[in-house]
Every structure is written in C-alpha cells, then in structure tokens.
Image (cartoon, rainbow, N blue to C red; front, side, top):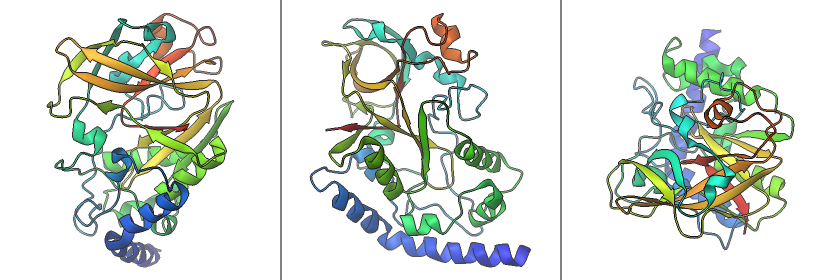
Length: 316
C-alpha cells in the first residue's frame, strides 16, 4: 500500500513540477477566453504559479502561509468551525452602520502586498495549480494520506490538521439557501461563478488599500462620504481556505448583497472595503459570535461583515 501511495505521489510531483513553467500561462489563457475585456485583478494574479512561488516538495516542507490568512469569517455560520477566528469578530456590524461618518467598531490590519499582489512584495502563500494538475490530486478526506505525502506534511502536525479540516468543510453539506463549491483551481472557480451568476459579464472585487505606500498598521476607521453603496443584488463569494495549494470555498447565499465601503482612519489612511450583508440569518447557528457581539437574534436584522482577502464576484 505504501508503495502505491509513493508512486502515485511521485507521478503527481512530476505533474506539479512541470506546471511551474507553463501554469501561469495556461491559467491566464483561460481567464482571457472567458473574460476577454476584463483584466485579471492583482489579488488573483498574485496567486498564479511561478517557479519561485510554487509550493516546495520532496524533503522540504511546503512554504505555506498557514497562519497568515484571514480565514473564512465563519463561512458556515457555525463558530465551531476551525477556520473561523475569534480575532475576526469585530468585523461584524449592522447595515445601519454604513451611513457616512459612522464609527465602525473594527480595526483592520492590511498589508498592501498581501491584498493587492503589488510588485515588489514577496509572497510565500500557496498558489493556484492549473486545472489539469489540480484534478490529478483527488480532493477528498479519503485521499488525505496521499496529499500529506505529496506535500511533505507530517501526518500529526498542525498543518495536517488544517488540511484535514479544509477537506471536511468542503465535503460537508450546504446550509439551507446556500450553493457551495470548493474550487481547487482558478479555472474551476471561474466556471462556478459564471454558472451561478448566469453571465460572463462579471468581475471580482477585493478589499484594497488606497495608501499603498503605507506599512502594515492597525487602525480604527469611520465610513467616508457617500457611505456604503450596494454593488449588486447578486454575489458569489470565494474565501481563501487553508491548503497546500490555493483552494477557495465559494458559495452563493440567498439574500446576500455586496457593498463598497470607503473607510478613513484618523491619520488619513484609506481603504476601499468590501462588505457583505446577509438579510436572512434565520438558519445561522444561534451561538454565532455576531449575535452576541451585536445583541441581536437570528432572523431579525441584516448582519454585515467585511471580507479582507476574499473575492466577491459581482455582475458588471
């Protein structure tokens, strides 16, 4: 059995190494085919594979930013999920807080190179695999042992636990009113969002830093002139989850609307933040942190939260 896993892992390794040279071109070509008039956002381009950014294999553990991600903001609205971080709790707020001048009870720490993929930044985050290479690795808990061996992850390590949890989250049932999909490649993510939104006339938006020359700081913000503005009545959100290569938990939730929110700090720093407002929370876990923080009950008022590194796909 071990020999079979070894040879299977080795064949995957050869595919992955071969993907280093032409992976970015293959993925970009598919983007241009589907979205010929839409430039690829920096946040997505930063996750394209290259020789220096591909995960490392063999005797060297994967240089993955396991602890540096924002997580999923409780994508299943169940705080028992391991990918949910209590440090993100202040990101929740009420829709009434989106008017100009509103003091947001939120401190956001953003690195321009992490959010924008700006040139000059060094990323050690997992990158996308081309669809063909991603499909060569069965994405399932039953294949966990092979995945760990392929990426040189110790089976009893924290990395292995995160990998297992992501697989379990992706295999779990969708909530009522939710259509979910774990995209193991950018191509599969594109196919899902196009099918869900029913059009190719769409684009991805992400929270972005206006003051790009600023170093990473933690600040408290207020809503700028014009307040938060709804971008569309439809949205598909794709959350960056923890895995040896880039995987996104994408879902389409009924009654969710995306907002663009200008945020301004006292020192003049600005962030164009993406917020999602959920108008139907009746099926959420009553123990979810947002209800305790905001003093409301499930199904009573819309609950909003910012997404920092995640992608919101909206119609043009």
